[in-house]
Amino acid sequence: MSRKNKVSENYLERIPVPADTIKWEADAEGRITLCIENTGFFNTLAQKLFKKPKVSFVHLDENGSFVWPLMDGEKNIIEIGKLVDEHFGEDAHPLYERLAKFFQILDSYGFIAWK
Image: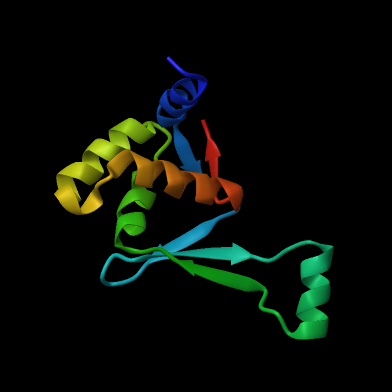
């Protein structure tokens, strides 16, 4: 088995949880919006000089809005994938590649943590 396959298997067994600093809300259709507070020296400077917002909003698509509430600290990516597959069927495929990329993006922005 190659090194790449080992990394992928371990990655899918990870348990994601929303970061403590992230607030989120759902609209009437169930779409999730993440509310990201822009803190820190450079963000404060940009807010004062360039009129940048104190809070940024990230609107998740239908798949992301379904996955976000499933991150309860109990389910790993494989278990979340099974629920996504039941809900969306073939529309979610390639399932685990898309989920892995989704969680990599969330992780790169610091929107999630790992348990």
